Figure 1: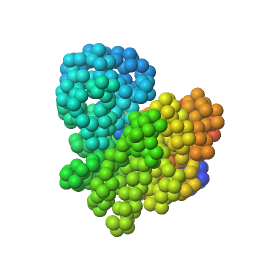
Figure 2 (figure 1 turned 135 degrees about the vertical axis):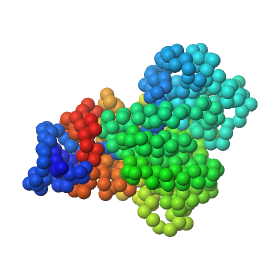
Figure 3 (figure 1 turned 60 degrees about the horizontal axis):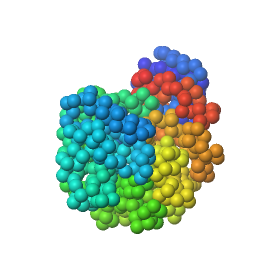
Figure 4 (figure 1 turned 120 degrees about the vertical axis):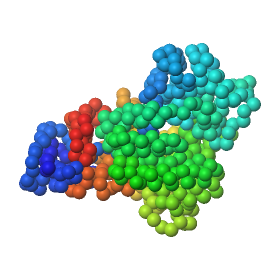
Length: 531
Ligand SMILES: [Zn+2]
């Protein structure tokens, strides 16, 4: 069945705007004049609307988001009192939950982001409570959780993680980085597959709702791929997903057989595009807000600290070489300039050892880059995956990062224009649930680099701003490239999949600050209406 879509503007990255699109069997078969002149069975006239390719999220954590949607809702709460009230409310309405796990609290509401277990104890002391911070590299727990995990003043920091202490050496209640977090979370009851699939469904519905049809799960640890496989088999997985298996220092070798088995099972599923697992996630450092991002020069507030490099150089190179040889793409979390340099060095050395191939490695966040390292991204064909919503002086940047970095370094964050000038490929992702998954809330931020209320007046490091067209391309076509799917999604051209969103306004023609108010009138995936 040939269907002709008409709208005021049909936009596709790098192409001339048109106003007609012919779709047959989920594929675009003609555009513009030639679409109108074709024969068709049905006309769908969308009037004044604006059509663009559906969004693809190149770095998100849908299953974490779905789990969070099922626990206490502490997101965006602005005081400890409000958080405690929500935890108490949730506990009272869920008396059968053996553990109370939720998120994600804003660490910036407390000086240094160090939260105390005693505060949680004041509302729940008989059951363990674990709350994730918005960076998801930090948890805040109550004393019961510490007791079950056997963590006390005598417990040393695990390699790659840290346990916050009070002045007298007692454990305070905040744990940072996976190595420390899992000391607690490994004791929590395992969620049932049905609970997990329900959480995933909440998450994928929330993605479709905002115009995303394809996403990357950038942190898949043991037991998570199984949830995606179950949802794909039952038909409940509505968003196309690419999974990144988490490789951990020292332990990664023991995971290879497990990853390979999962990849094989996923490759044998009926719909090959629905679920893929072709990427390995490597976390090189933490976050600037927590003082755990690895820096070349020390933190101002802790002159003896350069942050935390999670991997030893040799181990990282061995892992990169091994996974690359097995045909996995690398997706590396690196935020501080030392971590980014470590990632670049590892990719450089790996590419010398393994035979040449089309690798498209990704460095996610790429927040603070030493200037001399910028051209290396282009030389190595590395995609820098940025979170557009982060590219302004938000409260976390002002309260937690600026004092740690100082003005000059702080202002060097997110050098998008410098990266483009150096020929670097940029793709976008939300990092949801760390920050909002809504592309329309994020698209204009790297364009104005201002807070929602217009601060600072001239934009933060405005010389690094990009255009709205570039932003739209980075959230569509460039993520398709990151996913090796540039021949099927991310553009509206003949032969591409008819995945598109219908907007009530043209983002190219309105004040960038108004883009977040644009409404999604419809979402089509494979030519089928989803919303
Ligand atoms: Zn992430």
